[in-house]
Image 1 (cartoon, helix red, strand yellow):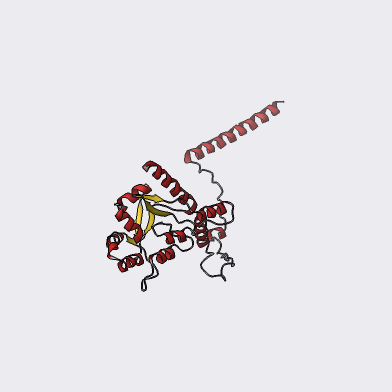
Image 2: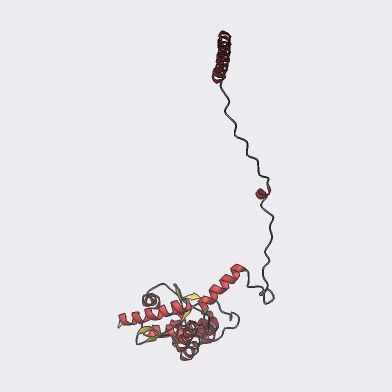
Length: 255
């Protein structure tokens, strides 16, 4: 049975991962009713919760939830001690505490943007949470913790997203990130439709420089030895020409 429960939990966690963007460490919001049930059934929440989720978890609660236990009977003193060991999440009721169920619902809002799991035994709170898409519920049954299957509201929301009728929370976050990078959001409705003007910068100074004329290739200078050889050849050629001229004159005279 234990292996079957873990498979069921793994399948449900994967559903919330891929459709609502849940990631480790999983934040589990716990109220006094869950702590009281765990105390009665001898369940060690801090030890058993990470094993059940097969990953890292953050157990958390609110000050309103602890205040509610303080105002109730002394039988809930043990549950209060357990609840005080968890991380505190800030709520809007610092001056005037409200009922635990009301406080938890205010943290979740309409979309559960912080991806809370909710651990509770309160039936009225459970019924209200099932009307919010993307809220996983945990409760205790027969000495065991159980992660409830996705609510019909969550299933309808995922179906609508797949049909293109809605945008998922993960897609909304990516859209907001892209808008912030492009500078399109955060300036009110007046600045939403305005296009950013492109600034015309000055031309590159290197492109304005005149092209330098390439120097003509220079012939290598002649050495002294080459000059002497050339002058010798010139003299020898002149001497040969004079000799040839004399010989032609003599032959013409004999004729």
